[in-house]
Structure formats: structure tokens, C-alpha cells
Image 1 (cartoon, rainbow, N blue to C red):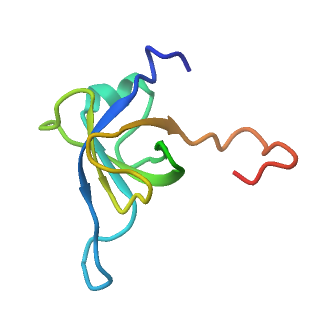
Image 2 (cartoon, rainbow, N blue to C red; image 1 turned 90 degrees about the vertical axis):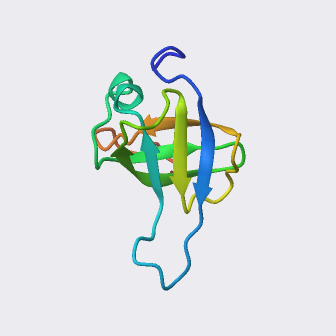
Length: 101
């Protein structure tokens, strides 16, 4: 994937849930155009690569989101105004030896 097709995205909001909240778990909201450029579909599992770590999250399209920005929920290691990249999960290739993720 090139820099053009996987341009960095800015975190504009971070949602942290509590154990009693109805909607919990890692999630990312982004503009559909940003997602389609990365060949990602609504509801798909994606990797969110932040400055300190990367995590799996469920992608949700949001037409109200500005292009180039994302909202994250329950993603540890990311903060508002930081830059992240989002990568499609590759389930077709076997894992490399010695690699955990």
C-alpha cells in the first residue's frame, strides 16, 4: 500500500467506555471516501496503527466525519490530535514464522 492510498489520519476524538456501557470495544469511525481508498468496507475488522502500539478495531462509515480525520473508541495508546494509519486485516496470507501479529 502506498502513502497515497494509506495516508495518515488525525484522531479528532477518543471515546473511552466503562464496564457498564452498552456499546463497548475497539472501534474506528472514518469518512467512507477514506475507507474506500484503503479498500475497506463498513463493519470490517481493521488494524489501527498508533504512535505507541496497534490494535484491531471495527470500522464504521460516518458521512459526517471530515476527510482525513477519525474517531477512535477504546483504542489504547492513541490520543486526540495524534496521527494513526489504518490497515486492512490480511487473512489470506499465512503468518510469518516468529511473528505474533
